Every structure is written in structure tokens, then in C-alpha cells.
Image 1 (cartoon, rainbow, N blue to C red):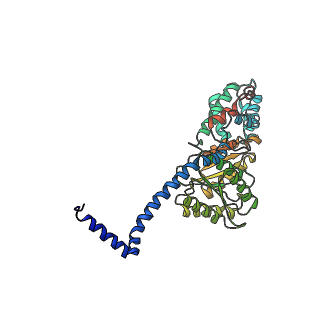
Image 2 (image 1 turned 90 degrees about the vertical axis):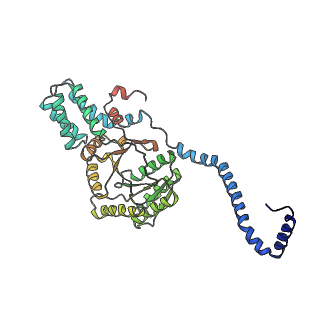
Image 3 (image 1 turned 135 degrees about the vertical axis):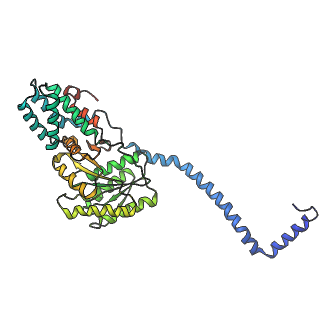
Length: 377
């Protein structure tokens, strides 16, 4: 770069300058030293993350393993009360008889008792009249099975656990005792098992037990729970949950709400406010509004669905306690009355008992012959 004759004198001049200007030299060299330190620090942190990754995966493994795959025969076994009350009694009623006016009246009463509702019962009987008139028991059951399956396929969701948004916000509604908070915990466990990060919002500020129950599910699943003051504004908790989820890059935020009676209009209107506040925290949220309904309440679930939908724009249903009731036929009535997708059905206490709804699986379990239902599955 320089002629050989100039190099000794240039070096000597630089050394002399450095001796006479130590502070200026330090200022010139500081950025270089910081850059070198940054490179070394980044390499060290990367090495630490690589070493810690197996440990992190080991910590996550229990949560992922906590949700077992649904057993093939579990839904069939848990739907036994509904199957016996609807299809079992139908077989006893029909016997070797052919379809006539008297039989249709008796069949109508049976469908009412199974909580299918007026609208659904009338449409099913119309099918029997047109397609099974004069037919035997097997023909009637085949027509009813096909008609029920057609109704339920109309409310079958594309994918129960789909999360198409970077931070997917789910608002969960339902009356006290419906299994709402437990369903939130099971849903969180399933998302964690799928490898997603989850945050929970304890929006039921009016009932301390609900917040405590949600905290327990948070500990089980490794999810943070945002809790507000007792009796505080539920919308504030919802807003804080959404903002925390966005700031931390959380995949799924699930927000609980007070288990209010659908007849208390002012309380229901609070849900409308909650939806609006969540939208201010994240444009387009909530992305899902899930209504939890207790199957044991029968036709009361229909009125709950109607009022909650008017207030909060329900996008999906969770039907719980199907294992403890003979009123599972209300699911068919809900499908006929509202056409809202049934995202999940609850058939037990374990996390895996919150199952993705499948129309074919449900109808197969409902119409399975008693001898087949007793076979191991």
C-alpha cells in the first residue's frame, strides 16, 4: 500500500500520535471493541440455547403427553344413554310393524322426548312419511339415520384446532354449571399438546372459584393466566389478555367470561362490550366466539344458544356432558335451528374427552346396534 521506504517512518509517526493522544485512540477503538464483544456474546448465547433446547423439550413433553388420542370406542360407550333412549326405544316401538298414522304419532312423541325439538321432529317425520311409508322398522331407522346425518354434516367444522391468525383469540361463553371453565382448560391442553403457546384470561371476575379453577388449569398446562381484581371489569381483563398475547407473540389467547343467566339482559349486554373491547386490543378479534352448552339441559340449550348468539355472534358450539344424559338429541335440534358449527363435544373428565365433532362418528355411535356396542373398542 505504501512504498517500503515510507513504512518505518509512518509506523513511527502513528506510534508517536498514539502516545500523545490516548483518549482519542480509545474513542476510535471503542466501536471495534464493542462489535467484537457483540459477536462473541451472540455466539455464546446461541451455544447456550442449543444446549438448553433438549431440556426445554423435556419440560414441554409432559404437557404434550397429557392429551391422549381419543379412543375409538369411547364416544360410542359414552353415548349409550342417548342411544338407548332414542334408537333403542325406537326399535321397541317399531318392532315388526309397518309405518301408519298411529305409528307416526308414537314416533313423534319419542322424538320429542329425545329433545330433538319441534322443528327437527317435524322435518324428520316428513322424511319418514315420504321415504318409509308402509316400510318396516329397518327402513324407518335407515331413513332417520340418513336424515340426521345430513343435518349434522351441515354443522361439522373444517378443523377444530385451526388457528389461522398469528395471535388467535377465542372468547368462551356459557351459563354457570355448563362446564365452560373446564372446557377452556381442556382446550388449552389440546393446543399446548399441538405445540402452541397459550395464554388464558380469567374474565369471570364475579366468581372467585372460576379464576382459581382457571389458575389450576394454567398450572397443569404451563399457561400463564391473566387475572383481574375480584368484581372488576371483565372487559379490562380481556383487553389485558389480548395485549399481553400480542406483545409476547403467543399463539392462542382463550378468554373466560362470567357464567351469566341468559335471562339477565344487562349482564348479557356486557358480553357485547367485551367483544368490542377485545377488537380494540387486536383488530379482527375475537376470531372465535365459542358457546358452551350443557347437553343435560335439553331444550333449554336451544334458548341459551338463541340469546347468546344475538348478543355476541357465536361462531361455534361446545356441547358438554354428553356422557351423562339421555338428551344428546338436542345436538341434532341445535344443528337444525341454528346451523352453527359444533366444534367440540365433551364426553368425560379427561382432556382427551373434549373431542373434535364428527357427524359420521356421532351418528355411527348413536345408531350402532346394541350387540355391536358391547364389543371391545
